[in-house]
Each structure stands twice: as structure tokens, then as C-alpha cells.
View 1 (tube, rainbow, N blue to C red):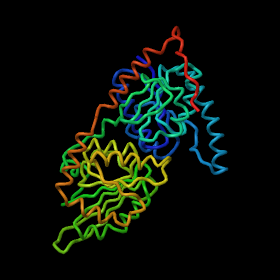
View 2 (cartoon, rainbow, N blue to C red):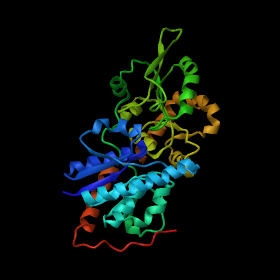
View 3 (cartoon, rainbow, N blue to C red):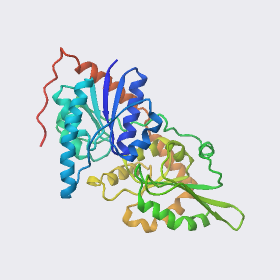
View 4 (spheres, helix red, strand yellow):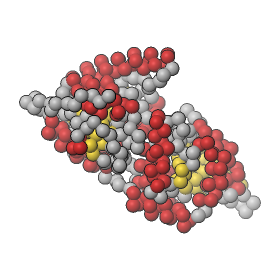
Length: 378
């Protein structure tokens, strides 16, 4: 049995794949500790995984605003001390980090203690933490076709993003029954990522009545703190009732995506992986202020493979037109689903877990000195 530390807190895009890896490793008989933040989104997502070992670590996100930057520096120093003490007590056989502000402290502490380190980058443009720390990596997991310099070829694996076991595709009718959606006709699902997207929430509120007139029901995941559980009903002249559902959070994303005829979503790597796995046609609206515009890069890559339509936020005024054109075009929806079936790879979690096992076995042990590291890339 090996011991693994997984740093994955801060956003659903980091925490969800961390849980997916923990599921695989625990099933193999290993022990895992998942390092998460103190954010509300982390607390909500782990409710169904109380049997896992979660460690809440200090930390704050990076910002160039003077006060927030000062807070970031202080919190990073606290995190470094916290992580060093924790790793020294646990002595894990390997660490895997999923990016974000908690990565730095654990990566440096693990390196000092001689622990094998793996990084996972989900986006098509690697984040700051991965770019800065890649010289410490024994392994770097990247999306297909993404290249990072400064590491030997054997250290890089293109395995994609691991998904939790609960993210499963199912027939549309079954999914709607499980969600308790007593509706007829078309369903548009709107998702703003793990923290929600206010601009998409407002779009739904502004357009729900006019979309209802077209016979389109809506299921909107608003994000924690951005709305309350509610249902709006719109009667049609023929007696049908069209509904718009609002929910701040969902524990069953696979069911929600499977219930949809069409999805509007941000373009985080986790959201895209779930859309691919569930075969859900989508219109992606990338967050325009994402670091290095990585959401646009994620979305364009999927669009090039016929798996979605991309609409930049600056063109949100034509989103309703795009929805109406696509949601009733069953031929196009079928083509997109077929393209997604060719793209989807549902074995990333198993592959990464197996590789981590090999990494721990090959590089651990008090008799085995850690192999020499490259200098930190500039």
C-alpha cells in the first residue's frame, strides 16, 4: 500500500479530477489525502465524499492589486510551513498537484523532502503554477497535443482530465426522471462552471419567457451564492406548461448533462470533459478574463473537432438566435453527439492512477536517492 497526497482545492475544476484520482487509488488499496481550500465550493463538493481524508490548507489566490498581492504572499508563506509539516508527518510516496495557488507550497515542500511530484494541467494553455514549477516534476500530465518544454519526454504523459465515477451518461428520459423534471419537449441546460457565471444567469432571466414561447424548458445551475432554488412556469396557448428551473449547485452533473438537448456552458477543462463524456451538444461561451484566455483555447480545440459551437461573450446578443437554430436541428445535434463519441476517452483516471503507482514504486524508499533534478526553467 502506498500513500498519496493530492492537492486539488480552490475550484471545481481542480477538486473534481482530484477526487477522481483518489477514487481510483483508494480502490486499489492505497491511502490518499486530498488538500483543499476553505472556499464554499470545496465544502459543497465534498459532501458526498466524507469517507475521504480532506485537509483544509491556508492560501489565497494571486492578484496584482496591492492589498490582495500582500495577502497572497503572506498566505503562501503560511501554506509553505503548513505543507512542509504535513508532508513530513505523512511521508507520502508521491504527490500529485492539479494547479492553483496551493500547488506551490506542496511542490516545494515535497521536493525538499525528496518526494516524487506529479503535476496535472487540464487546460490547453498551462497555468502559472505549472509553468513556474515544471522543473520540479517527475511527471507532467497534459491534454492531447499540448507541449511544455523543459522536461524529458519520458516525464510527460498526454492522458487528459480524469472524471469522477458519478459522471456517467444515461438516456435522456431516464436523466429527466431522476431530476424530477416533469416537462415535455426541448430542454436547454445552462451552466457557468463550479462558481457560476452571472452573465449567463442574467441571460436566462432575461430570455426565459421568450424561449418558453418557443417551447424550450431551461435548467440553470446558477452557482453558489448566485441564486436560490426556484421554478418559473410559463403556460402556452395549447395548455402546455414550460418551466425554467434554477438551482445553485448540483451533485449529479452527469444526470443534468444527459437530460439536455443542448447545453450552454463556460469552457473550463472540467466542463468540457464532462460534456464530452456525456455526449452533450453545447454552445460554449468562454470566460473572457480567464488567465491567458485559456477557456477560449479549450473551446476552439473542441469546436475544431466538431464537438461544440463557440460564441464569445462579446456576441452574447445573438445567443438566443444560435440556441433556436441549433436546438430544433436534430440532424446537427446528432452529428455533434457522434463527434463527441469519437473524441471521448473515459479511462484517464485509471491511466493516471496506474502511472502514479509506478512513479511511487520506482522513486520511493529510504535507500533510493531522488534522481537529480533539472534547474528551474526561466
